[in-house]
Length: 417
Image 1: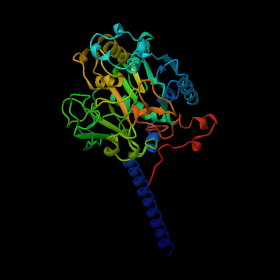
Image 2: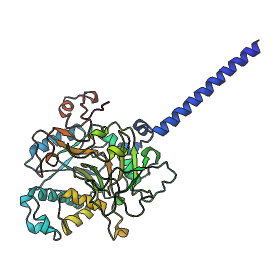
Image 3: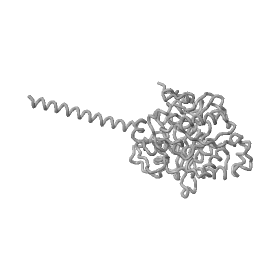
Image 4: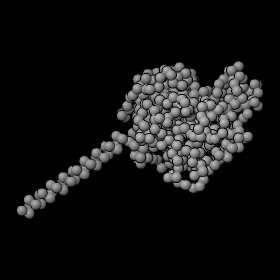
């Protein structure tokens, strides 16, 4: 009797252990398949990278903000937002376009640029001055902001993921064939506002891979070796998916989308548009809700509210658009540059621009805060808001000054049923 009772107990215990083991394995498998943002944050943080991005310049050498001296309203608001976010910024005086003489325009394209509004001329010269500062001070990296910039209060967490993606996408040729890359139809078509930015056709197929599956390159700068990239387009008004030359049905770092699923800083699809009356971004259809994607910016982007440059990139852009040519608004020029190629790239390295969808930084539209370049949101924005940003610093500035924590923040774009 004792023997049979003992055997029964042994069987029960063995059954429980097997069940627990299966439960554990199932849970691990479920985590690996879903790869939610929480899992990414838990298993993929690099202490050295975290430490660098937590500094006052977000892991870059300097943070530069373009501001017209007359716009003290913007300087005050930006200074306050930066202080609350523990950021150290340096202002670069913006330029009034009426002070830019025709003789100062680059020789190629001057017949067009001379006809542009003084706001567009001033914006171009202001960005050239910022690039000139990066070059003259020999900064390895710097972020150039416009003074209506805004960001989510979870900025550093967002930048850790972007930094990992940037390190992967700028590391050079890699073999992704062993990873579970998923192909899907590209909802972007010829009607896209980015359609004319490149001579390369819009890709019919998108190739996506969760960021958490790819090991991060080690022993490099937070955002990748600055000698291997030119522009990190961190803030924009919408971007196109990559449009590489060559073989569109083959994926590599030129057209791969690294994804961050279940990112709760990403608004639901119905909110993913740059302007109130503009079309939804292609991202609203291409991936599940709350997915962030990182990729080469070869499909164009609009607005230069925030972009990082390396010393290499700053020199190239200053040579191209101050010394050689200039004929259109600055964001269009930068978008075409990132989508283009150099015939001499083998010597200098191919152009590398990386971006995030949705953007990490965005324009803030304050009450009565008309831009010196054009109307708010291209003339369409009338609401006080910051597109793409859920827990906006600017929208929550008063609460942040009062010292309220994250629970006291207002979500601009709350989830709906």
